[in-house]
Image 1: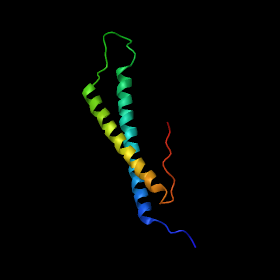
Image 2 (image 1 turned 135 degrees about the horizontal axis):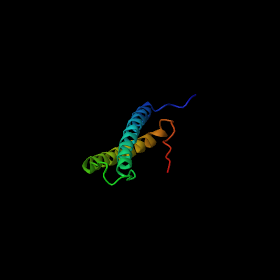
Image 3 (image 1 turned 60 degrees about the vertical axis):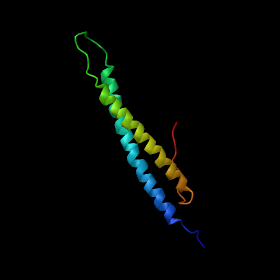
Length: 96
């Protein structure tokens, strides 16, 4: 006889996995925006008569958004891992 599936846990796992995917994409996009902004601000100064514009207020807003998205991503990963065993699914692998 096969083992009984916990469909409630499976649903919670799938929901968390979808949140992880969406938030990971959001984090990637925000981090890319910040990276491009910093790259533009740190471009080599070949001439003294030209300086790139750096909107530090926009940078700070995006950095705050990135922090909030990252917090939400960590919660979603914890949810996914919490339901992985009863859902008989793999936990989220983390790279350090």
